[in-house]
Amino acid sequence: MEPELTNIYTNIHPCYVLDNTTYIFTSNPSIICVTLYVFLGLLCVCTICGNLLVIISIIYFKQLHIHTNHLILSLAVADILLGVLVFPLTMSFTIFSCWHHEGLFCKIRDCFDITLSITSILNLFCISMDRYYAVCHPLTYRSKINDQVIDIMIMVSWGLAAMIGIGNTVVGFTRGKCEESCLMDAVIWITVSCIFAFYIPVIIMISVYLRIFLVAQKQVRSIQSTACTMSGSIVSKRERKATKTLATVMGVFILCWAPFFIYVISQPLIYNVTQIAVRETLNWIALLNSLLNPLIYAIFYSRFRTAYRLIITGKIFQGDFTNTQLF
Image: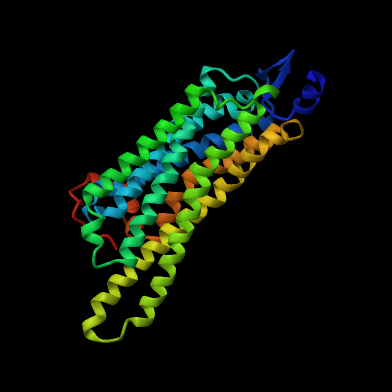
């Protein structure tokens, strides 16, 4: 059995070599290895800077102090923590080595990864609920979705994600390799975890945004071009644009994370024939989502673009711009 594993996994990672039965980081890295880590380092820096712009923008500019942006702020915090904690840990030891020799370091990395990833999913779920009430029940939106409700959503999202992440680590289900005696238990746990942590929330979010789309289309047809409905038209247009932007965020999230979760569910059944490099690549594609969210805000939101510009150019340090009207 051991020779087969050696033949399968030897030289599949440009930065690691096989020393007896242990995979170690090479002392003489190749150009491919150096290029890989430079690219991943830039990805890490860009993720941190992009989400830092989102956090500063929402905290600093009073015009961005709205319910939905509080949830976006929570999402940005999760993404920046992924950039600060998970990215460097993944780069320094990589999923590749953790797959074969799981220790405390790998458990810590897995705990952060699981916790922050699930936090992002739950934050997106809360955002979809906020958009649902804003578009489908505009008259009762402010009474049902207030600051207290938003704070509860955020605390529950982080608390539940932390419980799942820490629980997985303590119980030991985060190990990448399982002996034959516990293979079935691993398959069942991984399947159930993925269903409740990803598939069910995503299915609900897709259903919610589809409902929002249908209601928004109905609103467009019902709005009349009269003076008395002009303000309502403007509000409805603003809410639909916000919903479109956040639906795009969710769509990008699904495109980034779905391949990884599909692989994780199927992995225990195909472990002996699947290269670890595939899992590592899918993991980095999933982590790439943390970089894309700030770019989506800049593309769709002129207010965020203006806020980014004021921060990057340093103008916020030259005076008080907290009440500036962002266009």
